[in-house]
Image 1 (cartoon, one colour):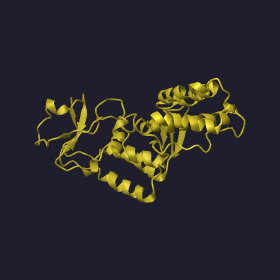
Image 2 (cartoon, helix red, strand yellow):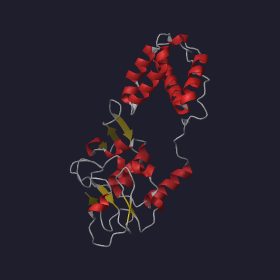
Image 3 (cartoon, rainbow, N blue to C red):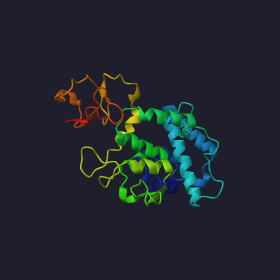
Image 4 (cartoon, one colour):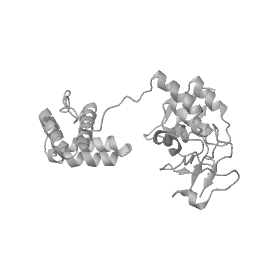
Length: 275
C-alpha cells in the first residue's frame, strides 16, 4: 500500500492543483495499511476505514474514498496490481459527504442562456471574448488568458497551447465561431488578451473566475462593484468627472471599477484604477 500511495502521489497528484493537500489527506488515513499488500485489502476493510473517518469528518471520508479509488485505478493502469483488484468497488461515500460527482456539461438551453447573458453582462470586451473562447474550445481559463498570437494559425484553424498544467503542447482545432472571434480582435501585441494596465502581460485569469463568484447581471445600475478582487465591494455612485478617493480602494492595491451606466464594452467612462 505504501508503494501504491507513493506512485499515485508522485505520478498523478504532484502535477495537479492542490495535489499536496490531497496527498497529505490520503497518507494520514492510510498509514495503518502501509505494512499490508495492496492485493490483501478487502472491500470490508475499505468500508471500515470509511466508517471510521466518517465518525469525525464525513466530508473527508468521501474525499479519502475518492483518492483511494483513483490510486487503485492508477496502479491497475500501470499494471502494478493484477486485473480485477479494486477493493473500493461497490463502496459508496457517506451521504453526509459534500463530494458528489457532477456533470459539468451545459445543456442546449443553458448554452443559449449563457450566450445571451454574456452580451449583456457589462463585462469588458476582453473578458467576454476570453469566456467565449473557453466555451468554444473547452480550454482552461488560464490557457485562454495567456494565449499568444504566435501560437494561433487562423488559416489552418489551429491553436497550439504550450503553457499547460501538464507537460507537452496541445493542439486545438478551432471551429468557425472561434476563428471568427479571434479575427475580430486586433493583434496589437503578442497576447490575444493584453492587460489594460501592465505592458507585455495578459489579463489575469481571476478576471474570468469572477463569473462564478458573483452575480453581476442582477446588480442595480446605481451601484459599482470591484471586478478584479477576491471580495466584491459595493461603492456609492461617483459623480461624473470625479476621481476615485483613497477610502474607496477597499483593501486592494489595484482594482478595476465599473462606473454607473457602463454597458457591454465598459467605455462610457472607461476603466478606472484605484491604488
